[in-house]
Image (cartoon, rainbow, N blue to C red; front, side, top):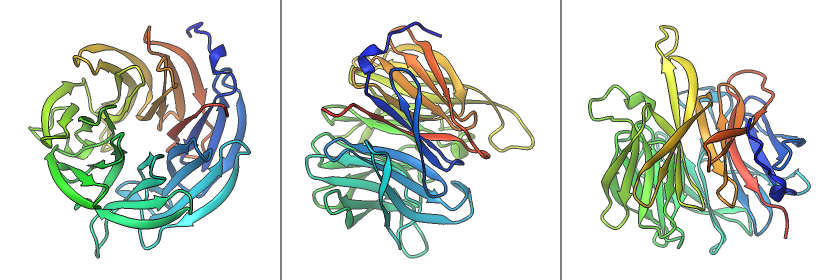
Amino acid sequence: MSTTSRSHLAGDVLAVVSQSGPTVSFFDAATDRLLDTVEVLAEPHELCFDPTRRLLWCTSAYHSGYYHANGGRRTELTVIDADTRRIVEVIDLAPEHGPHGLALDTARDRLYVSVEGGPDRPGGVVVIDTDARRPIGRIDTEAPGPHWFAVSPDGRTGFATNKEAPFVSIVDLDKGVLTAKVEVPGSEGLAVSPDGTRAYVAGPYLGFAARPDATPGIRVIDARTASVVATLPTGSAALPVHLTSTGKLLAGEVRSAPDPDSPLGRQLPGRLTVFSTDDHRHLGSVEVGLFPLTITSSPDGRLAYVSCVVSSTVDVIDLDTLTPVSHLTLPKRAEPGAHGLAYLPRPA
């Protein structure tokens, strides 16, 4: 492991979901010491930190299992006090179900939550008032399974990736309507550039991997023209995408070998692949755990955190040298394991 000093992170905390826990664990970002573990509803997925209220939002998508193989969809969001690490409230979004992706607009006090479709409505995004902690609207994305969601820095445009639909949905958040569909053959994680002009979208969804037009990589979407203008190639299917404060684009690649007993194959160590957003250069890759599913980074952009759901681990990577710094292991009762991440800077 790297000897990179993390003393400047003293007081900061990394929150990590364990789907099978079902828990949210809190680690000291400077020492990796486990500080606390909060039990939550079954199948927690993603996390989102509200720095204004110092609240942590957690989606619970299913009663058991995962996308396409679950024991029924859940309808809840859990709100956790980031400092006392206690549950503040559980919000029921019913009749909406399958909440997954989270995106926060602190300027407008809005939280956006992607939800799956059903017989009576397509998938969409629920709008939450973060002061009242209540839903105040819904935006249709015209796809059955919107999964990840991201918001432009000005809070006016939203992007929803759709596992099964062959397009990314772009929505006007002021008007609450779908404005464009950008052709992408099944999409996964995404990130939006600081100026809001580009979205970076991973694809294809693993179910699309056999299609001839489904070259694995990161599609670069021009938000002004609602079109794909470039593809950054990856060696295998990429799922999570993250953009650091220093302009590095991080993608988590899932690698596998054929396995007749598993549609996803036998899992091999994944890879964290890094690109420059200035010129789209490939900056390098580093091996991580099995099936990387979520990525975040420290506020200074020096460290990446990659949660890997099959190995139930979090790899901490030095992004200057692309070397491992440390390795966190989460307890799990069964598959799957580590998923959502949130970096919590110490209180001012």
